[in-house]
Amino acid sequence: MSPADAATMPRVLVVDDAPVDREVLGRILRDAGCEVLTATNGVEALELARRFRPALVLMDIVMPEMDGFSACRRLAADRVTRGVPVVFVSSKSQRADRMWARMQGGLDLIGKPIEAGAVLQTLRHAHG
Image (cartoon, rainbow, N blue to C red):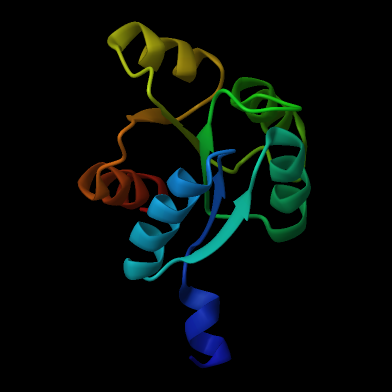
């Protein structure tokens, strides 16, 4: 891959404490032509988002050290990362959960188990 190709690939940060979910999301995104960064909790997510300014963050909600809602609020409050869209990924994906995710600053919520179609639709929506 040339440096020009790498520059045009959307960079997506996947944040989940479950290795299997990180791998599933990463594979779907890489197959779609994305550059994938991974973090295991909200603290790591904040550091990576500030450093790499991803086009999108796909974030689990329940994680150690800092949950996804707290991390989302901090991303939105930081002048460097406030424009980065966050989509939550959770096994809790009822209508009320989606509404709460939006109230916390998330663009949307993808339910688990993770389906490639939902991830790709979210990527298209968030990346234009």
